[in-house]
Length: 252
Image (tube, rainbow, N blue to C red; front, side, top):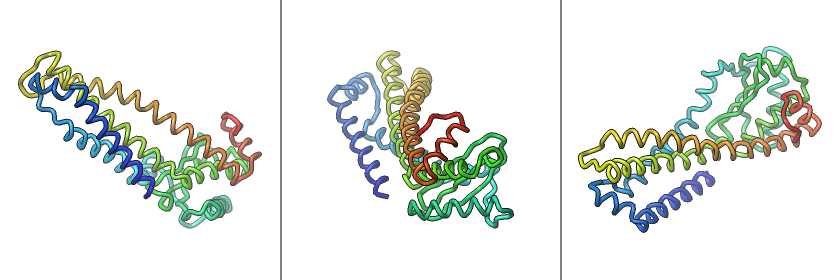
């Protein structure tokens, strides 16, 4: 909760500074001189609400969506020794990292894959593919589970959601400012929103979203490295090395 509060305060501070900067640079007055009724403060609020709102809605329904999209089946009552071992291993790791036992699921896929998702550390899901269970040793599976448990314990889902919320806010804000500049200043449209505004806004939003995704991927990759280390601590470094080799990845 503290992390969310700090990110929100940081984002508000950034947007306030941005609003002031645009005024100092004369962007708002330039738009007003060309007939634009753009309210920078209102746009800042609009961008923040929709930027963070979309990100947090995605986080809130992430478990439900993950189960639905992958066809994952939660292990409520273990039916065999492997499922019993999975539950036991995740329970042990959750106790070590100090979080509530997450749901454990298996999803039908021949690919070796696993993921963790959920709205918080204590409301999470860890899922592994059938292909991973069929092709990895128990030591390697334990390392993969440790990797996913580290994501949960480190609050990576929330952190990346907050980062996504920040970049979403900037994308929405700047795409609309650019749209207003092109529509009113360059194309000299004086009545409502012209086609130039909508085309420019959509184009700018696509380009800015691509650039923003690079930032998100950078932070995501850094969290992956940290989760590798956490998984090695939970399952043993050699198990993690073997798991990464099996997946064709780097060594931690």
